[in-house]
Structure formats: C-alpha cells, structure tokens
Image 1 (cartoon, rainbow, N blue to C red):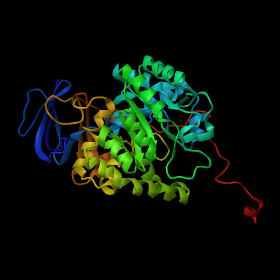
Image 2 (cartoon, rainbow, N blue to C red; image 1 turned 90 degrees about the vertical axis):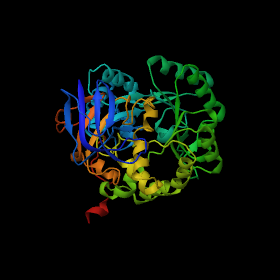
Image 3 (cartoon, rainbow, N blue to C red; image 1 turned 120 degrees about the vertical axis):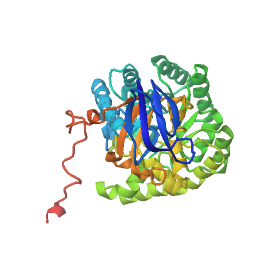
Image 4 (tube, rainbow, N blue to C red; image 1 turned 60 degrees about the vertical axis):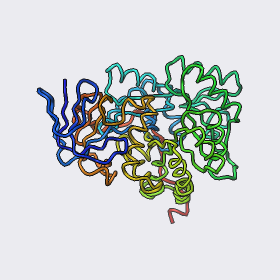
Length: 437
C-alpha cells in the first residue's frame, strides 16, 4: 500500500529550510520526498496550505497517571492495576489525535507501561510508538513525594532501594520484565531544605552502580535531576539521558557537555502553572517558583545546546496541569520563547532528536527516504509559529508506521471517573466560623 502526501510545505525535522515537496510512502517507510511525485493506486492526502512534518515525539509522558491533581491522589487513589492499564490504553488515543506518534513513559504505575507498549506493538490497542521504564528507583528520602513514600518497598510508580544489593536486584528485575529504560529519581524534596531546586538523594557511587548494572544488560538509564550536583554526578556516572537538568552551574554544564548526554528540560508543567495557575486557583508563590525555575535555567540549557548537547521535548503530560492530548506542542513554544531556539530548531528537538527517547534515533522522527513513516499534516506555517500545533483542528492527518489514521475514530466520548479514582473535597478550604459572618 502506498500513500502520497501532496501539495504541502515539508519541514523535515532535521533543521533544513521548509520546501515545497510531496512525500511518498511505501509500506512502513518513506520512499521519497521530492516535488512532483506520483504513484499509481496510492492513497492521496491533500496537504495544500499545510505543513507536512514528522510526528511529535514526547519524551516525558506519564501515560498511566491519568491526570492527578496531587501526590496524594497519585499514590493513594491510583491503586487498581487493571483499571490503570485500561485507562492508559484509552488515553493513548488522545496522544495520537494530537499528532504524537511516539512517546517515552520512563516510570509507570504498577509497571503497566510494559504491558501497554507490548499491546500497542501487537496491534491490540491503538497508540503511538512507545518506550517505557518500570518503577522509578527511589531512596527512602522519597523523591518528589517526600514523606508519602514508605521507607522500603513499592508504592505507585516508585520502588525504594536501600542498599547496593537492592539496587542491583531491582535493576535486573525490571530488565527481566522488559523495560526499555531504568529511571532514577536522583533528586527529591525534604521538609526543611534551604536550597533552590531539589536535594540530591543518591551518591555518585550508587549512580555508577545503577549504570553499570543496566549497561551490562544493554539498557539505558535516565535520571530526574533538579539541582547542579545531581546533574554533574549523573553525567559523570554515565547516564544516557537527564530529565529537567535545571539549576545547572558551570561544573554541571561542563560534565553534561563532556558526556554529551541528552537533556529533556520538561518546562511545560512549570510554564502552565506559572502562566495559567490562576485559572485553577494555584498558589501565587508556587507560580512564581516555577516561573523562576524556567528563567534561572534557560541560559545554561541554551549554552548546553550551543555546545552540541541534544535537547529533547517532553511535556510531563499525565497531570491535571498537563492533560493528555492538549499540551504536547507546548514544550516547543517554551523552547522558542524562553530558551531562544528557532522554530525549526524546536521542531527538531520534538522529532528527530526526540527519537532518542524511543531508542530509535535515525529510524524515525524525520522526513527523508528510508525513515519510518510517522508524519503529520498540520494547517498553518509551523516553521514560523509552533503554536499552530496546539489547535486540535489544525491537525489534519496523522500517519503512523505508513498508515493514515482515522482521526474521528480516535475521538473519545466524555467520561466519568471510577469510584475512588480522584481525591474528593468537601470544598476548597476549611470552613471557619468567621467565614459565615
């Protein structure tokens, strides 16, 4: 079966200037990208007035979380494994409808990511290409959930490891189950810390042990790092990717550049809270903190990029601030506005470079002959204004693995939540006697 995408402006995802060209797909791969192509019996997609570009790849998406509004909800209300898997499969359709043809879910509830990935690859449920981790490795400090996390054992998306033997055992166990990545929460929050960002809660020797154990079995390692020392030590330990990488200092930047370790800043969550927090009655103080994290980190991230470090787009989709199918374009906007990339550079970060998160760099994420055919047709000039991708009506066609998807079939009806799935509140605040006077 052939597909011919005709009459659009091609943005190849590799940084080349936009050009008028057709895209011919045969089977699962791109056959040619040239003007004036034709093919007998091909399915023709009219791309007149549209941008033709690679599908978006979201390298930081939590498909199993189902949009919690708090850590309490995430850890104590998402406690039904089968239900989490079923809802995750439904939510994967929302990503496709938004033009996401690939994503990395580095840590998942109950490790349902492995099962969802396998179901997608087997054609049992529709979804983008997917790479996945298992449970994030935590120390008993608790990562970003602090005292909600037990001192040992497994809860939600996390597994607490308390010794070198437990680290090795858990990494090997996860690889046995079939993960694509091992994720480590290198930083966390403590109740009385007095520093920006988060506290490093693993030492360098422990990080090296994770890497050595995983790499011996050909599996890469990704770290959640908000803080200079954690970034430096993760890069020096041999991590294959770093999430966030905020609050870098000169020493951390030097380590990242030397290791050339890809960074996924994931500013979408912070940007949404900083700019739109008032719409959900968020704390003004928290809004300022998140805006400052972007402002304080953008310069160093730009310096890393200019030194050749790959920047990848990821959105933290899966929380109430970043619901599925709505904000996957947003990181491109932040890359342009706050980090200072051009739209074409940001598109590259969201496509050909982001394919690193799928472990498919060079295989997908670009429009050139021989690549896997994951393609978007988007109304508007995305190479001038990446926010075109934010309007769902602008996504005219999605091609995944060479097949043109039925976008209507991916539309989900309104849903309700299963019993106990959300945190319930009597109201927005405590009712004091003085409130009634």
